[in-house]
Length: 202
View 1 (cartoon, rainbow, N blue to C red):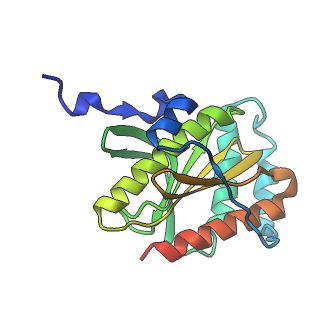
View 2 (view 1 turned 90 degrees about the horizontal axis):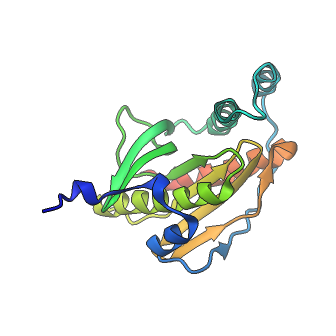
């Protein structure tokens, strides 16, 4: 007899078509953020300058340095939120690691899961597939904990960022692309999404 554990499928094993079927979505809905301009701090600007000494163009781990810096800057001021990198996640047949998870700030990882971030080197289709099933896993964990709240998702290669909002099974919203070339707008979009997360944490 096949064990329940062996039936669990890894996030990374889903194609985009399979992910749409898994989350029961036929079409992503339009999500229009209206971000205010948020200027990066002097510390953030200095970090970005120093990261130019790393290969952040061709190397995926190098790009993660940029993502780390941008997320750290965006999270500054949200004292009740915490980012987990390489976080284990699983629910109802789904299992794997999210590149980043954002949860309430505490010393252990548990519901409510507020945002899943998937970092992929220029493969936004694969990143979206993983992000969709990770958002479903977050939603299922939250539901099982008695918290039927929205979950947010981000797919990024460091240079481009797209945001997703999981309202419920079959209802997922997607923004246009935000880019690091307009950093103050990108930080504003991140700030808006994180404010929504902050409002859902309690």
